[in-house]
Length: 383
Image (cartoon, rainbow, N blue to C red; front, side):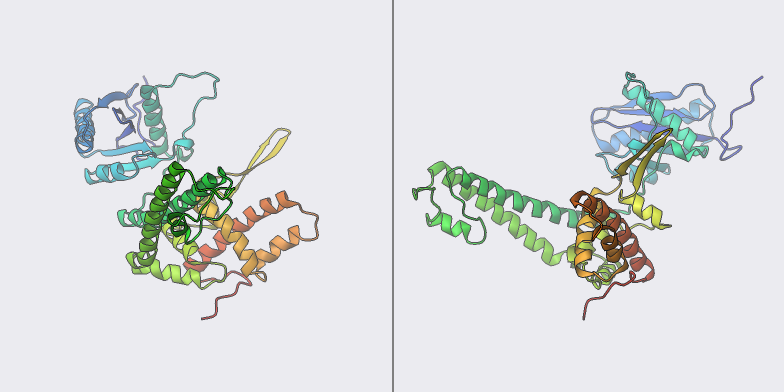
């Protein structure tokens, strides 16, 4: 006679695991309590988000009655991180459920060259992984940190600034390339729109621009002016829209030479909103940790993991180069110089070394923000 299955992490207490496979048309809902051979699968089709969440709630309550589970039994709901963001997690928590958002890349999959893949199979895989995760097998999936609503809202400010900056550059590049089609190599800096209206922008032989090209360039100038106006308005009020603790952290970071306004704002809003237990967590969060491949006689360095926040990772690489320029006497800069200057290191070796500098730098900045420890050999700006 087989013994009754119980949850190893919470003996004597049944936990209902619920996995959601999200899509625009339908949500697949998988439920499993660990006592049944197969999970229960349902579909939620309602077109309104709030009603679809209510469908999930109704399925969970109906399944608890069907399986004879206690009304107050613990229910854990999970879904993969994606376009839906965090709103569903917050909605489920308001209903009294424990909600988890999982990194999709952390879910183990079969390595067969051909394997069946459907939403039903996916939700079964998810709910089984969730049960294992709740039993203590933490390597089955990685739950991501969920920021508060205010913290998430503050990110839009710095991310919108980045998009506007990119849009402005795109408009200028597009106008420059359009001018090259008629042999004009002039720049498109300040005063370009005025010169365009005055007819001073000419073709390579001094003739007037084609009428259609002239109109297109004028429309590009209008869009460029709008993006520039929005950029100026956002930058002038960005700091004031943030809470006082965030502003204090930014000012604290900006005291260091080599750390500017944009870098300090992005680091605080994108990275230092969360708490880290050690330096390894900091490096892993920005994807700057090495990923070795060491199996049998194969020893390959796969480079960095490139996981986590790609915006912060790109920023840190730029800040690493600026740190070498403005903090040449710091321990981080001396470490870089020792391994690149006078050793025959080529450009590729320097690019590899700068990644290590970025990892050391973000750890040093984290210690500086959290504990006030100034990076070794670093200098502060003169007040």
